[in-house]
Amino acid sequence: MKTIVIRPEVITYHTSAFKDPQPPLHKGLLALVVLLPLVAGASWFAGRSTAAPAVAPVPIQIAAAPAPAVAAPAATPAPLVAADGSVELRSAVERGVIKADFTGNGRDQLRAELSNAGTEPLIVRISFGQVFASGRNSVVATRHSQLTLQPGQTGTLSIPSAALRSTNRVAPSTYQLASRTVAKIDLLLTHAQDHPELSAAALQTAILAQLENLPLSSVCKFTAAGADLPSRFDTTPFRVETPEVIAALGALREIGVRDREIALTIDPQLKIEAMIDPTSRAAAMHYYGIAGENEWTYWKTQLLQGDPATRHYALYGIARFYPEIALEMLPKWAREKRTTPIFRLTAVQALPETNRPEALTLLSELVTELGRNTELGRAAFDAAQLLDTALRKPVPGTPVVAFRGSVHASAF
Image (cartoon, rainbow, N blue to C red; front, side, top):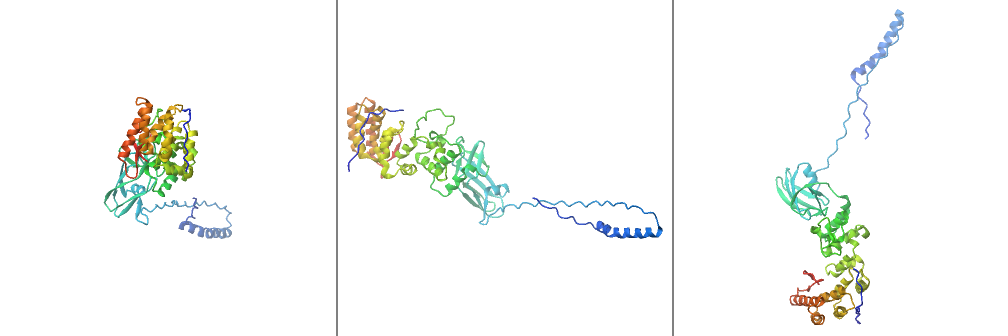
């Protein structure tokens, strides 16, 4: 198979209504109604016999008996204990059957200490979507959880949770039951119940993306372009690895949230970071619709026509996933003086990503050619040491190399 190598080019980098019932007829009123015609008849006959002057009858005013008050039908309370013997925590606490105290860290740790004050065994159930509050902090239960308690028994229950605000103070604190749900994330939490593989970090990222629509620089752990700009809030406790960002975006897409409505999708850096990272590569190809047979085309296009701020990242991807090509290509890019400095430096730093012994020889040659005292020469020397260490102490099945000169290693 013919190897295709991208030649170094001179590249310029840019940076109820209810009816009242009829009132019962009073006995005295009934007697009056019955006797009234008899009295009237007797008076008429008496008048005829005595020829007394006719006296106009005085109308009788009969006060209507007051209608008895009709009490509104009492609302039937929902049964406390379900057929399966379980009881919802909120209802149980409101009725005094369960005593509860909550502590949490404002993010992913929430613990309930529950006591059964009743006389029957209970299965205390906490449903996803239940909100807990502590001052300005708000967290939500992300999964169902339950605890069986005998009468008088006290137990502890760990509740999977997530922050509802990126401004939550992540520190131990006491919490109280708050609103039942947050409507905007109901669908997402329902989706999470059917996808246990969705990690807590990914679900947290998706929740904040829906509620606050944070930019990529607020949630990613890699150094994002423009991340040095001043920020009003410190979102460090909510930064996650690249696979979690991609998983969060995938979950939001599956529940019908359009990509263009999510700020995380705007930054082009996410795509190439996700493609470079072996732990997120497969998910990224699925999310971005890159077929396996088209991956090389993606890297080539990214390198030659990609966003100016991230074009050079493609050299790392080529080194990792196309090492044979990289061993031939990268030294040429490093030597080409007409190529912009960022591409030359990246070519040197990307060589260890091949995880090939041959790269050690190439790096040693570059140190000699470029000069140990130059920036490129020093970069080649450091890259050679890094690769040598990785080759001497490999992790079985997952050779370790560094990425972009980071002091942290990542699995190839």
